[in-house]
Image (cartoon, rainbow, N blue to C red; front, side, top):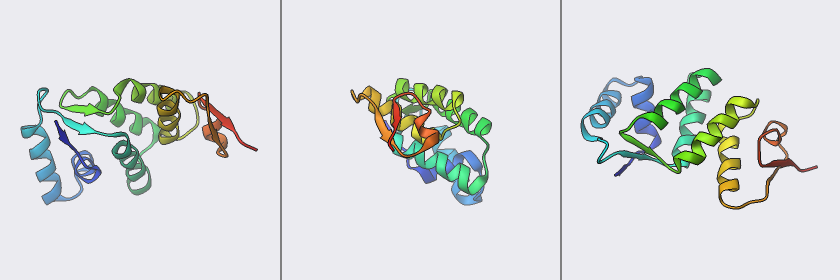
Length: 132
């Protein structure tokens, strides 16, 4: 398994820099296999979401498709895939950020009773309680 950094995945997804996008695409499509997948950890996944939303104006529907694509591509191994799927479903169901949904699901999976937050949108997600 080979760890993938956010910038490699962003170049692959958005194809916005000819040299780096070509290198990322070549690496991902020729080097990664189901036997030697690329590993995407939760931090990287959250960075991808942030960059796509802030820098490229990706919509919630587009973001959902992209995350689902990363989760279903056999050449990628996403950290704790079951927890990530739960976060994606929670993100779909509520008007909250994907990263907050992932935080909540990771914490639930780690045995937390709940996660406290000041964020009203996050508080609507499973496993969150609004503080104050």
